[in-house]
Amino acid sequence: MCDPFDMTVLMELVLSEGFRTNPNDPGTEKLAIWPITDAWLQDKYKPLPPLNPADEEDGVTMATTGTRKAPNAMNFLLQFEVLGKAGEAEWNDAGKVARAFNVGKLESEAIVALQSKIHHDIVDELKSATRTRGMRSFVTHDLLSKGIFNTSFTSQVAGLEQWSAYLTNGQNNELASLFLERLKGDWDRLPVGVKKAFTWKDASVIHAACGGYLGIRESFQKNVPAADFTAAEPEIKSQFSLAVLDNEILAFLEGSVPPIQLKNVRFVRTWVVVRDTY
Image 1 (cartoon, rainbow, N blue to C red):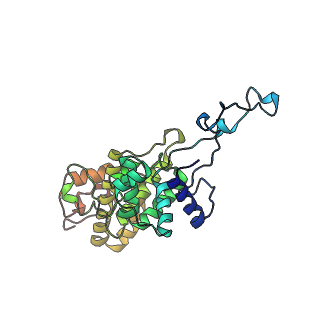
Image 2 (cartoon, rainbow, N blue to C red; image 1 turned 30 degrees about the vertical axis):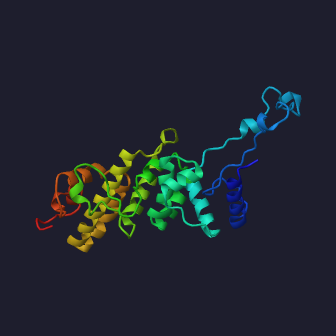
């Protein structure tokens, strides 16, 4: 009792990928068994009595334990990959995706971003990250739909427009990859009870801090003696990964214009004597 289109997709999934049951794999939902609804029955549904009368008060049934979460962008991404293997055209139009799968605007735009606007290496990193952390509790459809991982995305933080060259995801994926590493690290350090998905506001600020860090790091490496850079870089990197330097980096970007003047970066001055020419 399944919609013909859904049945076709399910058959293609099984034929091309095999029958998957592990809910930890991207695109695989937890299996659940539910009683048939009264609409499909000649008589009203009647639950069977428990097999063990002693369990009547607190017995566990399929209906009480079965849970099914709504599909997310990662689930649909796997389906598109399978459809591609089956000879279907790529789905890269948000409106078409929304109509075909009956999903909302954010979900369809997130799917299109994963399918055609985010570099495949970053998509693979996102798959791995969400596999262990969960899609909805880590990276939301809102972030994906607004393109924060897209190639050529620029941090949309007011006051930093002059630094757009440093705050734009490049073809080498350096910024997008560092940004995702920061999200993972920040999320993993939170206690279990307070972990939550990143909002657009928080994520865009972290993205800008990542771009500023890479620009400062590049200038630092080019303009100070190699021995000084080698000695200082591990600790600076460690502090950045712990979000210690974010406010300082953002303050530097807001209070200056390109090119980067290392003498105005306090955490660089902490480690080396910066000449006025830097």
